Image (cartoon, rainbow, N blue to C red):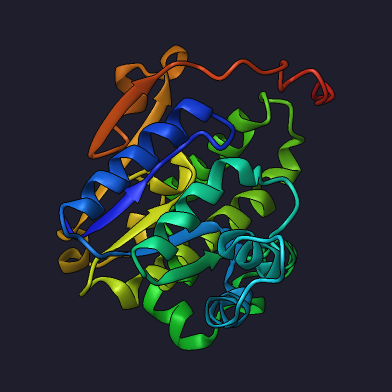
Length: 249
């Protein structure tokens, strides 16, 4: 299908290597999709386009220069994502800044969707009539992602931020459906039940394949059913993510 939601566990090195190899194979076979990045905020598109046009300074590669000019949010490990930028430059593919910034996500969380989306977008996405089951599932996913230690009264705002990110990602890739687009994103946004696909219409959804890359310790049938295709990969060694989250009172 021309539109690929290519999921990931953000820090899993084996998943990034697998995805980069698969993408290169597709490009060498002649495909020329746009490459959309959750790792670039949508406000940085002009900076990315400018960086593509100008020569990098001495000692910097074109990919390094582009990443620096895009001023990505802290927390992304660019040793993992730089190969995808390099592929886009090598094959002259559009690079799409797809994510909602942290500042806008906070505004959506605290002030509501109208703080970051105009009225036509809100109406098209039916943000004022989201199914209760969708909202509840997002709240549960946020709580699960925080080791089930989040205060219950914090969950609605955090879920609203995630829903806003899904919509922003959908809006960012929609203009590229005709040529094809690969979105690099976390598994949560690629989920077919509550992720980005929720904001696609039936004709758009028919063009999309949502691929989840799951770590083997979480790759059970229940997790896999949230994607069109799911692959199990080795788990990334990491410190206990729950150790720094206070127990729920």
